[in-house]
Length: 507
Image 1 (cartoon, rainbow, N blue to C red):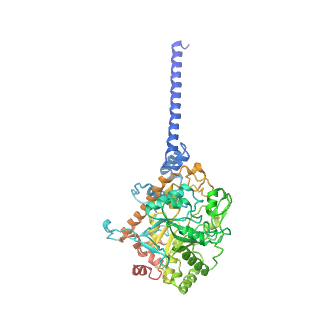
Image 2 (cartoon, one colour):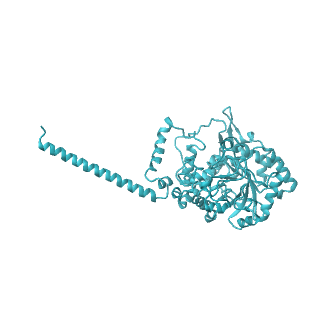
Image 3 (tube, helix red, strand yellow):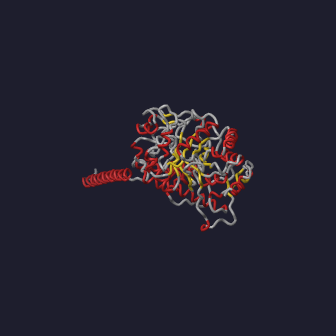
């Protein structure tokens, strides 16, 4: 028999345990409430702001991944389209935190195509380094554009990305001193509100500068050009992820405001023609460039993916026949590895030349026809780290633009939801609840940091190579690993026609 005292003791213990359980549960509930309030009110992390409390699991699992992925998951440099190492560099650069590494590189230096920069035995001292030199674009336009900006924001349309994303990018670009491309979706108030220099892109549907029938309208061109922030115009012939296919904006993203900016019906899929209906030859392309430059007074160029490259010979021959003033002021070359929010898989996977092949080809063709100094080159397509950018400068580009790199700066987690209006970080969605996680004032700082740190670390590469400025990098400053495991200089892989000498003489 259990005594009454023992029973009372047991009941007392149970009561205490029950009370403790209630207290613990209460504390847990209170903690969840506090975390919820803190998450939903903070502005630094979009995931926590949009998904309070549960959003912490993403960062927890990401942290655990550092320890478990070598056994169960992809390694740092195995993911596509961007691996963990690339994204991590972009995130750290955007947050302006320590970007150094310990113990050694995780990069395998043996695979074919690996780029290796050649260090100089006597590197450039810090006090001897100089900022990137200004470059003039459009000497035959009324208002040439002179800029020292090296790394800029590639075309992302308002509509494809959200209002807070555009605001953050525009403000960040202004603070960083770089330009921002509107993408083919037209000029929104949010592009102008941030105060950045703007490159207005004219896509195949001519959004923002079209009449009711979709034809280019000179009055609307003048209206866009009247904004001092609009510094150049870019005719988009094609882009890396979908050459031969126009832009695609799902109807769910075509709000009344976006429809008004573009001049299209609300809620309908916005699908651009697969080419400009009024440009079907080199002659028509040059005529269009001349027309836009005359109407706007601003530099005009075009963006393209190079595939059937024989047309470059015909284009440059015609330019020389017409006169050098007829040339485009710049050519933006996009690689087949460029990105997009939505594209058919056969195009995104299999169409066009990658930038590794098309950029040196374009540079060498311009040199061959004596047009290299007249036509500036802008490179685009998966250039999001200092190595990528420095390689492009070595090959011969004047400027670099990136879209996805700046998306990482905004907080993109590569969720691959760009075409579904469900982007969890608020970048490519018009869902107000999800947009709330992206606070433009905070993300603009990250955009600025990313651009600034990119130029800084490209400068580190340049100084190690023995030059004072990134724009002084040449092909002999880099090598590339071949299929026998040994590297050769870029001057041997891309011999060109004395490309290095030509650029030196032109200085």
